[in-house]
Image (cartoon, rainbow, N blue to C red; front, side, top):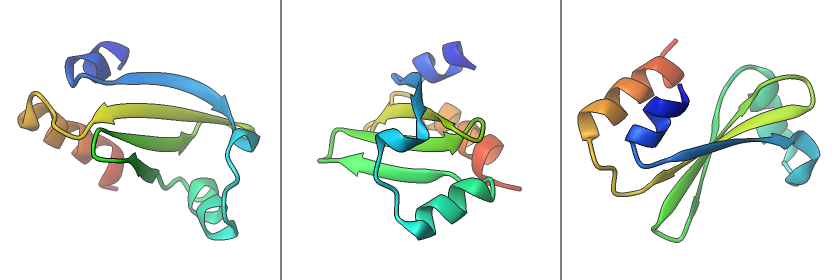
Length: 81
């Protein structure tokens, strides 16, 4: 998966769940297997997925993606269930 994220111009890292002050609603979403998408300005999007009970996978992707076909595949894999 890291190479796929890099091919979209993105990066990934593991973060502690407590690094971000999540609302109760967002915590419920994460605990139910849903992703949270946040944006900073119009440059990047951060996608957060709960990896364990205390760790998040943070995927940062540029807003202007280099290959929209690959991004569509990525969205289908992670967000359609």
